[in-house]
Structures are given as C-alpha cells and as structure tokens.
Image (cartoon, rainbow, N blue to C red; front, side, top):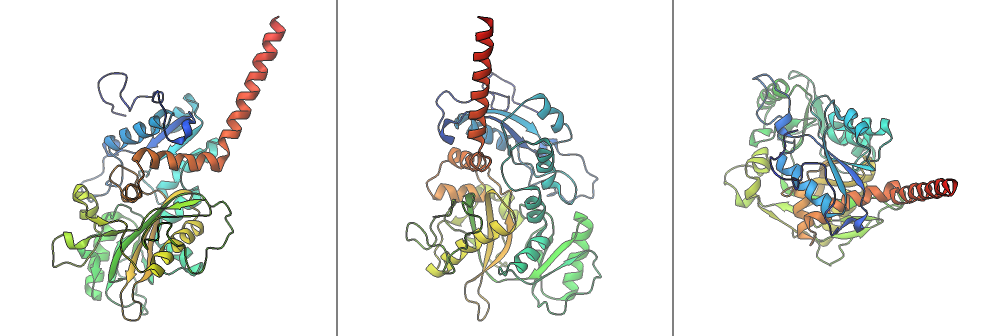
Length: 410
C-alpha cells in the first residue's frame, strides 16, 4: 500500500498506541486494520461506470481509522484486504481485526475477508460471513425482512431487461443495482413511471454493473436513517411492541436497549439541494456533495414513529445476522392511508464509518467523538468474543511458564 513519506509518526505505518490511551478502556490490543482503498483498486475496462469503486475507502479514511484506534490504546497494523492478506496475517500475529473491507469483485465480496478470518480463527469486527452476504444483496435482505414480517416496499429482482414485470407492482418504481453500496447507480433517473422507462433503466443498469437489479415500489416520503453500536445481550429478548423510546425524551433521540446503543435518527434535508427533482438520496448527494451534506439529527418525528424506527432497526439488525454496528435506511411512507409509516429500504452491516459518514454524523449528534465511535465498535467485538478473558488467561499461562523456567534455572 502507498504510504506517506515522512517520519515514524506516519499513521499508516504499523505502530504502537498513543502514550495516553483514551477510549476502549486502554485495552492495548494488537489490531489488524483491514481495508480496501480506491488507490489500489484493480483496473477495469473503459465501459465500467465511473462510480464502481466509490464505496472503497481513501488513504485519508485509513489514516483516520488508524489514528482513532491508536488513540484507544491499541497497536495498529494496517493491511490491504487483497489476495496477499493471508500472508500478511500469518506474518504479523494480531489479537483482533478491525474490518472495513468492501471487497473488490464477486457477488459476495463483502463476505470474502470475514470468511478468510473465520478460516484462520481470527476475531473480527462487524457482521458474520452470512450477515455480510445477506446485507450486501438487497433482494435477499428484503426476502429476510418479509419472512420476519418487517415492513419493506414490494419488490422484484431482475436478471434481464425483458423479464416480465410482476403485475402486482405499481408505478412509480425505484431501480438500483442489487449489490452496491454508497448509493452507487442511484440518481433521479432511478425513479421510473412507466414500463418503457423501466426497460430502458434495466438495460442500462444490467449492462453497466453486471449484476441483478432490484426494482421496488417507490415510497414518496422522508429519508431517515438509524444506526447502532453494540450487540444484543439477550439475542432472543423480544423488542417492546410499542417500540423503543428515546432516553432523552426527544422523539428522534438516542436510546439504550438490551446491550445496543441506538444513535439519534438522522434525516436528509432535501430542501437544501436544487429544487424541481424527486427527493432521492443519490450517489451525487452521498459522494459528490459529501462535504456539503445537509441533514437533520436528531430529526423531528412523532414519538410513536421514532419508537417504531428504533424497534425496527434492532429487529433488522437481529434478523440479518449483523454484529457490533449497523445502519438501517428508511422511507417514511406518506402515501394515502400510510401516513409516516416507516418502510425499511436496506440495512448496511458494514456501514461507512469515515469521519463524514452517516453513522459518524449520527454519533457526533449524540455527543460522541470519532475516536469513541471507532473504539466503541471495536469494544463491542472484544466483549462479544470474550477477548479480554482469553488474553488474561494467555498472560497468566505465560507468567507461569516463565516462573517455571526460572525455578528450573535456579
């Protein structure tokens, strides 16, 4: 990987923790920071869409992760999540892996690094192999949601442009690549209002992204997102049917429930962008205008709706096998008879956690520093694996062995 030229304080070089650790309780672990950066992405042919690698991190993102983890008291070893990762992990013993790898190719690319870590028996942050595979595949996610009785717009998965349309689906429809993140492939053209426009959009997306296309009924309403950090203390404890109230009393505020911390609800402020277009949280807003991002956090919603969104976030987190963190995106349905009813669009089991990501903005609105967020995710994994107890036993065994050797030498 390319690194800064310069001194030994370069945060991209393997290095030790800050002298005064804060966050993560100063646990002082050896952490492999796993990432994929745009600068190292493979070359594609000229027909690939320009946004194809936009969900990959930048070198600046990796520096931010590294600095935050070191501030938590950890020794950090940055490693690219590429075919050389197995060799790097064998060469450099670590206690846990902080996984941010989006993957580069394949239908289940986000699951590839977790699968490797499972095979090696290494602890890691974020969703399981299965959870990553499910949350990357939007159609599969929706099938899981439907099975669990969770509200999501009706949909159909297309593998060819001429595939017959489900007659129960009603226009307008929303189209997007089935296995992309960061709003890749999403623009105001994603909304189609008749079959001719649908076929044209399907042909483009299938050809450009070389994967199936998700088509769902368009929900005209507000874009709201809800994120959390932690893990369920009792995975089988039902969520309250009336929802999860905020701790502050603000309907869009944060909450703690059964081991997870739910951040304040955030809403995209579409009024701040150019008028005359349907409100779509597009790739342009998410990437091109990222540093001019307009949002409201916590947003204003009726108390019952805020409670329901928090409950649905936890239920989606549980149903899809996510761990340590997630972000669930909603539309508040304003169609006749469905005033402000939350509809789940998708879950991100590996949400962006760069300094300007949605989850980070929600955490900041909750009074969290960036270092606290990054180390909070790591702490959730440390606790889930019982890693501190394992390391304590390892240290105890080493001390006993050293004492035994010393007594023999005497």
